[in-house]
Image: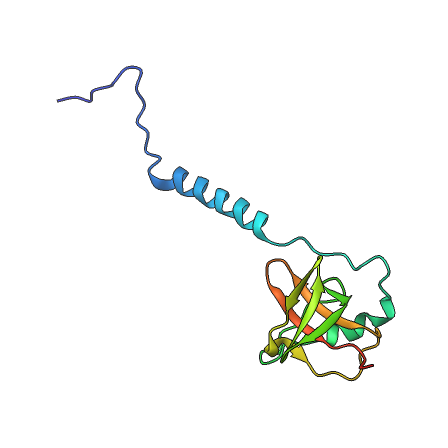
Length: 129
């Protein structure tokens, strides 16, 4: 028997290759949209304080609290046995494990390192009055 040709039909042997590539590209686009944009320092940030902000490390893990871009001076208060920081118009409880004991705060105010995704990463009290 000879070869049979099917007129007008081509064999498509794409298999999972194209579907896999499409899923991979869609996944990359999704992940890129999930990663936070690099934050900018507040408009009144003092670049001379950047080394201090960069020195802040999360208690227990030693991971950076981020930088001057994620850390902001905030109002704070003591409520019972914990602190609360005023962030984006509301009082938020500061987890006790996120409080840094630092006497070298150059800002003159309490500082919180916070993002919408991670929440409070570090908190440094302001000077006691």
